[in-house]
Image (cartoon, rainbow, N blue to C red):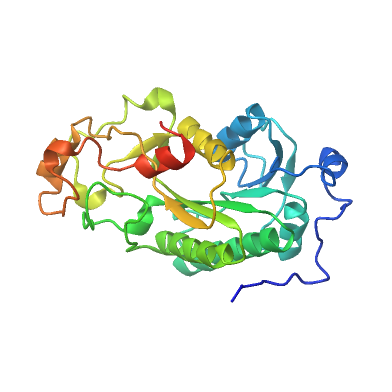
Length: 297
């Protein structure tokens, strides 16, 4: 039976909306393909890179955040996404939503507040996107959903690895992924990206561990540049990915600067290997992402 999530008649639809940016009002009734993208958490480091990448790729970007921490190439609309009415206003006429706006455990130490507000924000944004007609949601999850402690289900990791969160932040991200799976039943395209440690490209060779401890490292010492992460968003929006999926992107190298086989032998000798050790060149398998989107770091 087809699942239909009905829109509240009091909420704005995709008809002309007075609070939309002018160029969105002028184009929303004639544009038939995905060109208008709402980016939440836009003034974070990743958000800034994504806004630049989307504009360079020809997308119209609507950016929102709670504060103007960094300069953007587009106008910033300040909003609190705990306010559901603000979410409907911002999502109106968007073809896609790139949702980055969540609290981290570095920003909020109160576990209940962090979890409750992240989950509420995610539900507000996802529901507003669905009811106002957005076809795609891309959600910034985290590799932390796999848990720490060096306990891994297998290597190389990929987006199918089962979650085992061990902190409130990771738990909130897992709930966000489950929400996306639910919204995909309404015929939306929903992609959760389990980002690893993100870093500026120029610092790739600087941050290497000399005395690493696998029990204290989330995500098998993986990393990705902000630029490559932003390019992945553009690549996803440029494809027709139907339904729900989880991606786990990472640079093929690792923060130890060692060969994948050497890292496995030293730090993960008892983890199940999905193929022979001699055939493993990276600790995170991004082949599905490459195949489906054409992206590679």
